[in-house]
Image (cartoon, rainbow, N blue to C red; front, side):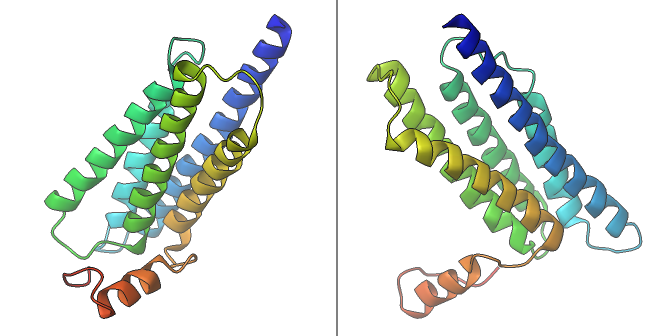
Length: 174
């Protein structure tokens, strides 16, 4: 049983390194693409994400409540992004919304896993664990991809415009 646990921890750590590399590549791409441009916003955002994901690698996955700690990491990263938004007075890139939504989804998944394993004591595999794994990985990949291409690939901005036009939300674009 201990061998299986270590194999799962090792697999999870390797996948975490892969997604950290995605954010490192996004940062390096945006850094090189913004050298002769005034707009450095995607470089800033990708730097925040890279630092967040690299720092989370140093957390021991076998400590008590690892999912709760990852939840706190995501909240701290969301806070850093919102702080950046208030400091950066220019128009924000599309990637900003994707990062906020993606980190919020990941935080909810981490909180759900914490509740499921630590509070409810579930020890068997069920459908939520599949949602957690595929949801978290697809969200991480989407965030890194949008940092590089800065396109509304899932239609979040179209949805935001539709909600605003139908009086579901108020405010201005941006």
